[in-house]
Structure formats: C-alpha cells, structure tokens
Length: 248
Figure 1: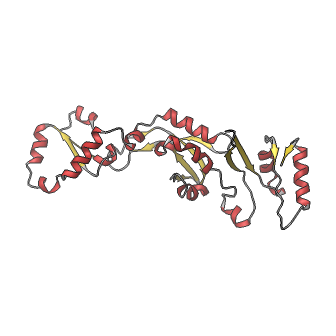
Figure 2: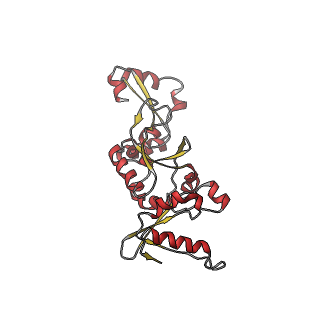
Figure 3: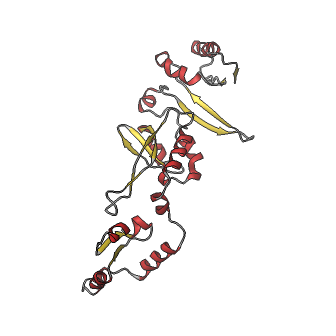
C-alpha cells in the first residue's frame, strides 16, 4: 500500500482482515480529493462499515501485534533454525518454502521461508493432533511451514511428527513396519529419550540397519500370546553383531 501511494496512486484498496488480522473489512486509502468523492457517492451509505467493525479495527491497530502481523513478518532465518531442530535425528528434510499473503491483498508478494518435508501420509494425523497443524502436499510430500505455528508448540510438534510408527498406508495394510519410525519421551530427570522403530523383516534389512546402527541400547518386546520365536533369536543376534551391549 505504502509503495503504491508513494508511487503516485490516487486510491489504494486493501483487506482489513488479511493484512491487519482484524475484522472483515475493506479499506480505502488515497488522496483527500479521491476519498471525499467516494464518501459523497450515493452507494457509500450502503457499503460503509458499522460501529462494531470500526471499534474492532481500532482495537486491532492500537493493540499488540496480531498473529497475522507476526506471520507476515516472520524471520526466515529463525524459521530455518526451528525446522532444523525438528528434523534433528529424523530422516526428514528442511527445504526452502515461500509463503503467500493470500487473496487479492498482495498477489505478487512472496514471503521467503523454510519448511519441513514429511511423508504425505502424516497429513491427517497432524491435522487432528494437538496442536493441529495443516501443511500442503507437493510432489507426494507434506511441506510443514512453521510460519503460522507458535514457537512454543515446537516440542509437541516434534513428538507429533514421529509418534506413529507405521505411518505409511502399505504398512497399516500389511501390518508390518517398512520405514523407520521415531518417538520421544522425557524422563523425570529432564533428559529426552528417543525411540527408533525399525523393520524386522529381511526384505527391509537396509532400513533396519540404518535405524539400529547408531543406537546405544535395544528394547526387545515379546508378544505374550506367541512367546519367544525363532525370529526373536535372529533379532537378538543382529543386535549382538552390531555391538549393542545394553538392552531391556
């Protein structure tokens, strides 16, 4: 708006809700002659804002920065740091991701930023989680832009993006782990423990080795209705071969 007016535009219109984060409203800025001419038009009375909208708009302008203002002015460097912190210890990527103002308010304005690239299968669980997070799917990847996610929600978000071990459709359908899964929990001491869920099937030995290679300890879980099986012995032998000396 400021750029257009400084360039000599007589009238500039904008949306009060998209750019200011206030009530639904249409704003007109311009020269006194142009604005007075609009005010005297017979239709002005039909389109003018009511007193409640004006009061809400005033409160928006006089009050603290709105969420919309924070989103529009988010620091790209800080967004990248947050994405890297969330991606640490996971196979997820940090990728460039430009945001958009939306609507017709600033159609050509791009907002530089960064996003976390996740498997598209996580879209539903993140959308229904706490806090609910909505990403956009591009090229079969879910791009999670943190611009509209409060920073204090990052710890909960870190757990949410990896708490479902079998997140792929083919994993749920076949009832077996294919890709690596991650989950975190905090101990009473305050330390964080990361769990890695790895596939045990020989067809996915590459993923299994990638998951267990760096771990300091292994947890063996035996189904009570099946007991110790030949596969259990093979798993224990694999952990021993990898030099893992601590377990539960």
